[in-house]
Amino acid sequence: MLSFVVFFSLTYISASSYAQYLTGPVASGLGGAGRAAVDEGELILLNPAAVVHATAFSSAIFYEDGYLDKNTHDRATGVNLVDNSEGLFISGGYTYINRRRTFDQIATREENYHQVSLGKFVAKHFSVGAAITYLDSNIIGGRSFDQLDYSLAVHYNPDPDTGFGLVVYNLAAHNKNIQAEILNRNVISLGVHYMYMPQFRFRFDLSKQTEENPDKKFRYQMGLESHVSKFLTTRIGYDSNNLADRRAYTLGLCFDGPRLKADYFYSKNIDYNGGAMHGVDLRLPFW
Image (cartoon, rainbow, N blue to C red):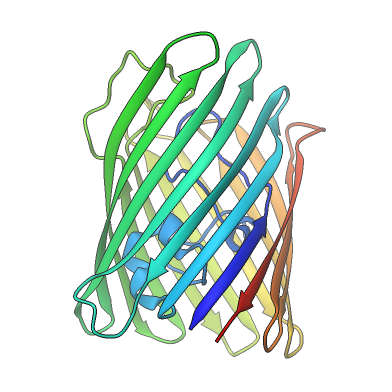
């Protein structure tokens, strides 16, 4: 099946450092959680080992624009391709993102991001994956910085109702001369996904930044999905980033039609009155 996905999304991304570079629209309606999930279109962004659960071939283009905090503006456009065709030795995907970030009292950055994601089943229901990333950050009127990095992941799906994911982001040695706002940081994330009856799905992610985190603060992301009818799903979530001292609640809707599929989410930064974000995606399978 070839699916074409258009994302018009305003997603929550940590302004202090990077773990995964982008959170997709489905996870954004569920507090950003999804390391154990297998949602089409964004699975390689959160856990590269989950690429083995993708459709045979899919592509996506996306756009996002919004304010993460006061005077912190983020806008990005990008494309990804996923190939999980039958007979492949390793499933894979590629993501490219062009991004412009404006910070409070810090120069604007133009960024180009590339990610190659690879995944393979190594046992029944158990897959491993890796992502190689390259980030080119250009400070307007100033220097540019390059960051080549990699992440490792596992995904375990013992039955259709349960999933577990573990991702270790940004394992390469990092240049400490790069400004903190754009510096990759090593982060460990553990995710759980559980479906209770056909109507309810719950997901929970726990993450910890291992660098420059002396108080060992965690990030908690969780969400609940409810299938209210054959074609309609509602979502609610919560994101607590203790290291960045930022909390947000999220809401989402999904229309899962026989051909057209669409997701909408709303994310509100509790600690910033102007920090609300919205997003919608459209998925149109061709065959």
